[in-house]
Image (tube, rainbow, N blue to C red):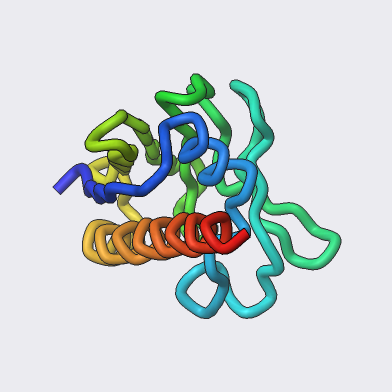
Length: 151
């Protein structure tokens, strides 16, 4: 397998869905043992092509990848490198935000695993991980929608 995919339908129009995915990544990307370890304090996208997708640990910044497509509200793509991979091993994550049924269908494709020689069980772990993360993303949008309705 060279690619994993995860898809979620969210109750937000594409521009808002894109902004919540990128600018508010820390609202939905939970931390813990499976996602960088307990020392991770946050994540951040630098919003432009060539910018970094960063994992934060206190005052330290660790690039997870570099943005290759920044095209709000429709597309985002970035390289991805797991810290324990062999130097030079890189994959790509591509995300589309498409209007559907009054919301947005967010489709994430993570590809390039065929070139990874490091023995880390990429496809299985990433398939489950991205589905879990996108589920948290949808939950965050649902919570924000409820908050707006109450105000």
